[in-house]
Image 1: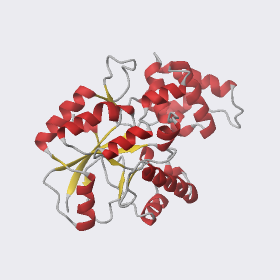
Image 2: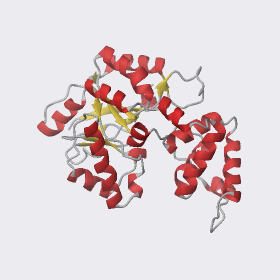
Image 3: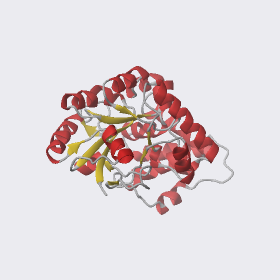
Image 4: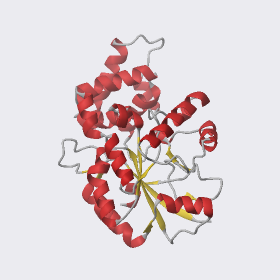
Length: 309
């Protein structure tokens, strides 16, 4: 039973001397050093190599390594692709349809840049408290102080206060309030021109097609980048079917296709739908080596790029 290392990347760009020096991502120089180091220790494989192992039991090379890139950032075409192409390495790219097609900023990205833009994280919490007390009619008052006191941080890359802000804006607050708060905070701490910001942040349809044409793998990453595990069967099915249509529209294949779970969220219904639609591989955010046994193809583990620095 063979196991493989799969690494996931998000932001890969010049960070420290940029407009967003506190953005959590990987410096492009570190990315280049990393893949040079990985090249000496592992053997890079392609999505077809993985597919042939799963479908036809074709043996993989020793110490196989697959690179994946989530969310469809402009970083991936501007900085990542040239380095992969230069070294003849295939990457698996998972753009979100909402950002690529409609130029909308994902709430998760708004939060990243809000955290970068605020000089003090307490300013963000103060604004959220103000919004909750003045802008919304809540049936029950939300006590942020008690919530923060009892909050348990399970994020291995963020401190407790940062994780708490993410928890509020991604999970705890009612959905409509979460979205509205993200929009208001983004306008205060980042930019009032969301469309312009989105155009600078995400790849276009043309750029995604370019990646596919030049040997990269394009997989699915949700239509609206929603937490599938929170949706009922019908809504999950709609999200996934629409995502398949998008993959086809950018010249990707829907034969033996791949899915990367937005936010790492899925449940038994998700797996049933993917099996029904003949999805071959599902990528999670569970840390560890991917186990290529015949029951785990839709639940492949991945490492974060920081685990290999």
